Length: 493
Ligand code: AHR
Image (cartoon, rainbow, N blue to C red; front, side):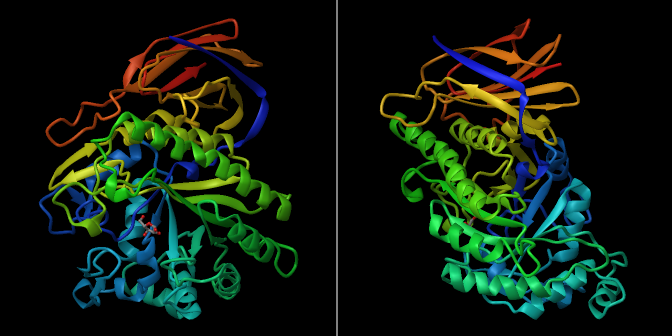
């Protein structure tokens, strides 16, 4: 048993935790949209307007605040006009990036907005810079948000008379790679043109999100901030910069999602924990160009990238999701909370059936992965105020640079939510936490714990689920025990 001390100071405020930090990502990739989210109006699987009821219910339960769409690399080949109007007239295309399958465009702008309506989340549309035009993206924004213009009339003719609200507009995706192999300088110049002509119609205010760096490409961040943090008139051109970082301790084709050794478990924790350094260093650059904190850091793609499940299409990125992935999720979400002064949004890749999915489907069956349950344990942080939380953790194992325990805390309406993870394979941790400047009389705890290889599948959907847990609290001192491989939520009220 390891004893670890913690300190939470409720008066030492970091920032409001924007709900979008708990966001998700759905690309036209494999069975994420088609079969995972959307089954069409004629499906025997229970749905509303073609969108799976079980998926919507599951999303609502974890309070999904936003879903980034339509990609990813797919966004850079997507032409939105192909996906509106009568379905039998929609142009087909080949999804070159992901398996070379035929995309029939039956899920387009209207279907996506309907998904957001059912889930109760904000849209986050990613536009096409690499193979699209300024006019095409500008017209998409007009189609969605204007009134009384040619595009708005077309939208009305297609069945939607009221404009939608659109806050988040991604201007390109991974333009250093699949989005056009650009240099940061070239991309920044493109952003200025695209951003300028995507207008704020009708009182709709766009937050234009620039393509950010891959992982530790600090040079990309520097150039983007230099060019886009101050436009004509002094206001930032970009409202956000979108960093992508995947947990990949070894080449994904070598890393089975469920069959790995202890060394790889700890390498995965180390790769996940690196996100804290990334957030710190990218924030330092952003602080230099934007001391007023007007440009948010978005982590538009994050999560584990493993080998695909044997026998599945390698282009579909369908992988299982074990307790190891749940620990990775907890390490990231705790880091996002701690960095919430700069982090405005994050989107786990990807919602259903792709990469570190929260849900897996097979026909009409649905499974909630361990990662789904982490989002359930963390959901009370949304809209809370992140407060200082220090954990005197030792390293997870000899030679591993990840801390054994990750943590964060927030306060909302007089309730403190503390989330913790223990990524040791062997050690039980006894946490003794001093909670300063906060008064509470009740403590409640929930836990997700299992062997690092454990997962849920269609025959065993509840092998890894949240269970009630015990914790003690008296006179500002919280005591809670974390078994090996566990994620917990403690609530003080
Ligand atoms: O999430 C899968 C892919 O990973 C996305 O399409 C791309 O943006 C990233 O490289």
